[in-house]
Length: 459
Image (cartoon, rainbow, N blue to C red; front, side, top):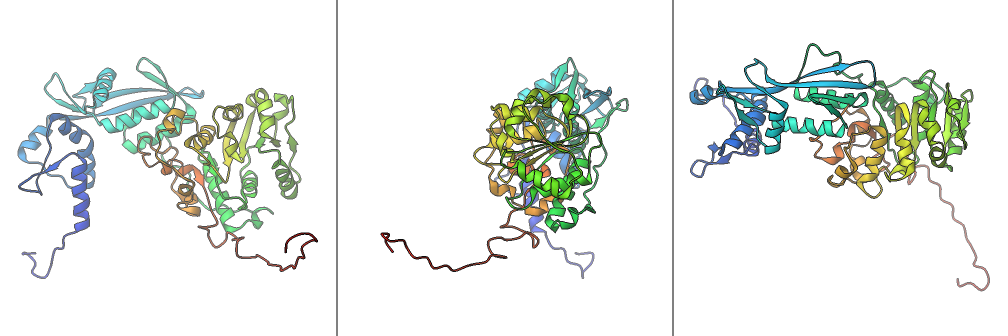
């Protein structure tokens, strides 16, 4: 530094490389004679840069304009959607979107916005001589979200079911879009934080540390109105973790429905009788009536009985709907899967050590039960990049404490394994914590036995 002989400035090569890559990603091309000088050609690319990349650069860097560029930017108006949302007390939200600049100098109609997105343009020259810049990438993501949420459109008013409110709120928060002051509904500012849960029950005191962590994660989801997959490997105690959740966070006045293969139901009966003998536990049998499911208690049903009693189960409301061995609904074309999707419950939970067996639809069908619309349509799920069982254990038990949003962003889920991350918890023995038993080594006993072959058999 010429002003301070004892101070030296060192270039941050890594930051420079990242900045250079960001410039290239924005469509700039390095000059032939001067590689450190970048140019951007065509009006379409310039408009896309000004509407999408430049605002992000201004948040992260100090951006300076030449005098000529500064004069040009004074003619540009950034169009942002202003959203008015109403909740009339039913299960539906109604939404109106107005596309205009914050100062009100430029406004785009819905038809003009649709036309720009269809042509993949990010700017429009207005009649008053100004240039309207539309953040097209964010708007495309928002359109995908509305499509996945199966909205109903009436003119310029949009209606969507309240179960998709989390997706809507996350999109608004991520893009920092304005909510009209006349709105009667607004997304929650924050979620309930994840906190280790104190389990002061006979069952809770017997849980291993990783199981207590799993129960805390399940409690965290329930507190925030979310639903998830407990995908621990076989033998790690998914059943006891679920029972601990039911004891720690009951839904007063509502029953619990547990659906499992017929061979697994005795395990649930045994564990319930062992830890909670006072609970009313009943089996769903053929010709069940909706009135039977009124009041508290735990109902156990096989997947066959669930399918046979579809009408009665659809008419009931449960506090929890739990699918054990949830891979049984992996085929979306079956009546079993469609019955599971139709269940009404405040909280939904899928238990499976193999959430993904053969294809993307396995996971899509489970998430269709948990959070309808989360993964879009079944056809869209076929276009996902490869996802494997290994992806679920990348992060292991630490995934329980991940910062969870009510709905991950839609199109930005380009890395498919990230999609379920806020709503799944998977621990494996290979990448286990110290509290997860390793049955392949610890606690194994070996016996040597000498066996003589029977007469007539080769030794």
